[in-house]
Length: 533
Image (cartoon, rainbow, N blue to C red):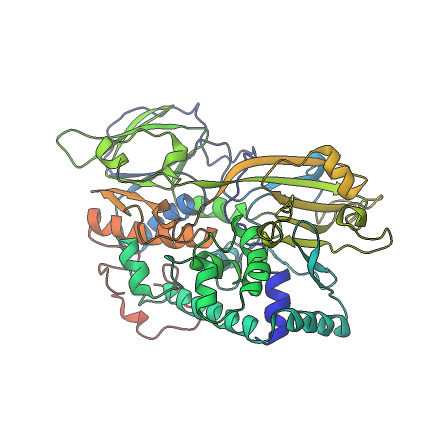
């Protein structure tokens, strides 16, 4: 990938991998049961596995178990508990004006990328239409709270070269080149997780050390400076990526999180909503799914290695339990000796504001520009101005996402009075008055505050993957790296460990250290572990 692609594509297209957002979006699917469905303690012939959480981790865990059932005849039933009334956890959509004839907007995890092989493969297997996340005509700016430190015009050949020259002039040649090399090395290592030789792990600290990823025990700033990347490049351009993707600055977030923020080539998303991937995981898993069902407590069954799960609808006994939600956000009561194994994990509170406006660009006056100036439609931010004693940016990012339009297949492709859709990430709630100042005319507004991403402090200590015999924790992986894709990888690993422990075989056979089927000795370039074994 040549220099312009690094600086332009990474900056504009790949900085929006916002992997930890969620919204309760109601819908009903006949397969899924509500809390009103009868579900009481009863004797079953087949052993059962409980999965708590129906987001990326939980839905994919059910899918991986179903793969093992189909391949090796494992006799096990799956129950998935979800306290919300929707499937998808950190991926959901809303509709402008609550009108489902209009194209939906991703409220959370907007895109995934070519390197995300599980999500890409799922989209293909489930016949989901992908939409490329590209806008060649979108100008980009980096705002420090008082000034645009960088403006990058897009569109024509000459504009592209002019943007490249601006980057060269401000940061030099070596900073982007060295950053690109670091990111590419991380991606290459990441892709080995889809091969037959992928490691399995029950200790994330050991896995992280032996896997030789970008380190997670240094800040992004320290790591990049240690590799000869100019500090200004890290504190402005790389920080623009870490703030939009994780809501964290380069002098706080660990180096692996910083590198992941910059790594997204071939960005796309499911046109009708990424949550459809997770619905299809469950539809293809044979699992029974209990929506609107709160898990209250999980206890050991006295004198056995079994577990009793108590919910708002009753109780059930299980041979295995997979917790696929951040423990301290679930309010689930665990035995004290297990609860103390999971240290509190802080999350970043993030305000997400979606809106429609007839203004093609933000108003220049807010940014201290002349009234005829054209403001970029993609505005990222840096904390560098505040570090220098100025004011901090009032937002992490402002991004235009095209026109309000009708859903494909409904009458008319566009609305008669065109509006643009805008997404804002911010630390604080933005008021109606602020929106009017920045955009002038505002039509529909939707706001949501949630605990969006784990705070990725530099660390070498992680919660255990295996809490006890038959009890595993998917979100132990999150302090290392938090994306939709890595949730599906973490769940694949946990399912393999659990099935080996309880049933003597895994997703791809009976060996944890390798794949035993002879058909896997020579793998094709598109081989994906778990799908093709």
